[in-house]
Amino acid sequence: MAEMNNNSSSNFIYNLINEDLQEGKYADGIHTRFPPEPNGYLHIGHAKSICLNFGIAKDYDGLCNLRFDDTNPIKEDIEYINSIQEDVKWLGFSWDKRMFFTSDYFEQLYDFAVRLIKDGKAYVCDLTADQIREYRGTLTEPGKESPYRNRSIEENLLLFTQMREGKFADGEKVLRVKIDMSSPNITMRDPVIYRISHTTHHRTGDTWCIYPMYDFAHPLSDAIEGITHSICTLEFEEHRPFYDWLLENCGFDKYTRPKQIEFARLNITNTVMSKRKLRQLVENHIVSGWDDPRMPTISGFRRLGYTPESIRHFCREIGVAKSNSLVDIAMLEHCVREDLNKVATRVMAVLKPLKVTITNYPKDKCEYFLAQDLPTDNACHYIPFSREIYIEQDDFMEEAPKKFFRLKPGGEVRLKYAYIIKCEEVIKDVAGNVIELKCTYDPTSHKGGATANRKIKGTLHWVSVPHALNAEVRLYDYLLNETEEASDKDFLERINPHSLEILNNCKVEPSLYYAAQGSKYQFLRTGYFCVDKDSEPGKLIFNRTVGLRDSWTKICQKK
Image (cartoon, rainbow, N blue to C red; front, side, top):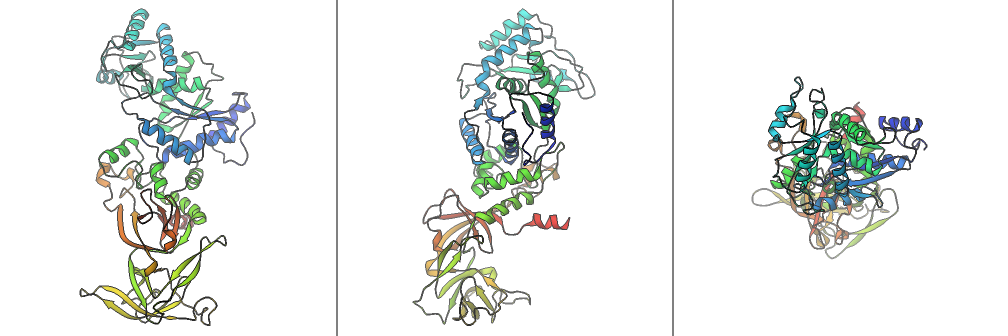
């Protein structure tokens, strides 16, 4: 087996794999896996793991399995299984026909447990969960042995059989392995490998009432599937000795069995990265669901308008490290902008409309101007122009400072793709609010006209009033006011109350009437937007994906 493709980015995991290959290990090829628990939706941290595991398999011409760790039926649901498959596919990866479930191996895992009992290395324990924690000791004090640790092999086999047969209540007994209660690694102090749970499983029904613990099921499932490298996040580093102990004591050869390698999990500023906390946001109705565009879930980012290419790019850029760190969310947004800049069609949209009447433009006249779809190709579409148009409220200032190059009384601006206009009169309501501008236009200032090249510092986007479509625009901001690590306060106290602003009176150009759900656009001078899944013709809904400003580029330039 050759080393990785030279076009791929090297990191310490690749170096370790290369060392294994140079030593003649794993001659049948590299085999990784992505093993999610189906108890919630995947988030951006999982995306990093997906890209890493499937990426390693691709770079080494190997294989990558999708395996659901479905060992806790209390929290699992088929909804999560379906969403995980959709997310992995959307990110651009395929497991082919290698989708497995830990429940596929329940009988084999049970047999391994029986083998450990017969070898005198596992025992049934009657201590409660609280008592087990108490007996386990601390980082500075050794644990003490369970009073049930020296039960005979025959008694343990009988009790474990009765556990399977459902003769005990939940929590009444557990199966533990017999290692070392004085080990400096608390994980090795007789960990629990089976517990009782009279819960219907989404795949096996009521066949089982005992379920294996993750630390027991995971390494054995890896070995059963022929996984060569089990890539885990850093919190599993202290579990690696048990991973190796279990495979050795269940008879797997150390030269061919899986090797666990840990890497730093992804942490991003202003972002909740805990599945438990994300579930809390959903269950407390702080967000509309797992795919709320403020959620860092893959489905949330998809609905917000992120592209799979941008997420894969982000995962490549941040790399793989051995120590935890905090990534600025501006870097993720930079990757999104870079991709959307290449694929998002440019259109006219006015979020906070201000009416402009061009008094010297014929009342019944309508012109159509060519507007460029993308700056990188020749594709165009037509946009209508008429006597009445909308511009942004923020593009007019009655008492403007010297360097305000947008519209002001007596000032001129160029309308994108159209004419130069001059503000002649300001119309206000009884409260003194500006409700309309009266302007004149220079009819020779369009492309090819006598004054087309006249220098005007300000250029505005606009939408024709009689042709404008109504739209709802949702402006999303960060869900947290500060980084998750910045405070010990309950994270719910740091929820940004202004994380969503809904604008109901927006005006967009008529080409967007049949805009398909998920379509990406750049609203000129405003930002990148995506058509929401609830949008339909006559009820257009857009989500702001990201603004035009790229703070990450500025941060890098300063460095």
